[in-house]
Image (cartoon, rainbow, N blue to C red; front, side):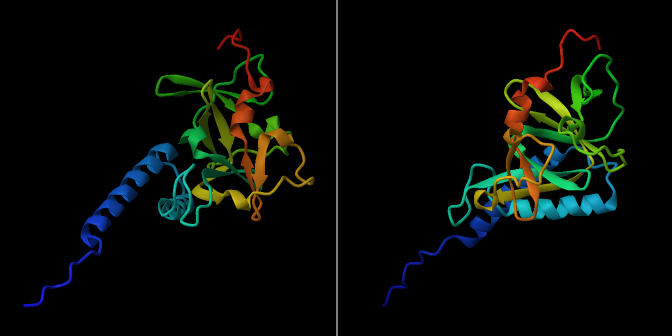
Length: 216
């Protein structure tokens, strides 16, 4: 009697289960970073959901695509009419705009401080720090809690679009027409004019440090 050929094909049900389990973990991670979705407009929720769906199908920062291309996972946000991004490894969470308490005798770019579950953060207005045109905040405004090994601060954003991958090959040197921002604070710009900030450089800039002696 002839023997059936051995089936060396992968176990499809197990692979699918592992795939969806991985997607579920990634979704939880992104939701935790984006913070409480309450207060988001329907349009913002839709943008974030689409960005999450696209992000979940791609490797995270430091991983590579199927073609071996380095990828960066970034949070995309707006300052005025321009789109900016910061790598997710620097973003602790994204919060709806809450009451900001002004602090006297601080630089103009310090909007004030906020209390996040008992932890106090200075809030930085990047439009002032980068010498960009001023624009009034709206209900779409958000606060990104960004950090490195030394410090964590809040950053004002006029809106947050979500999380997406950026391939290193997409990044080009910042154009000369991109005025106001010091080149050292920029990692590059994509063809869609998404400006990737070098948050490590920004957080390490001496001009960003608020004097600890200032009373809160």
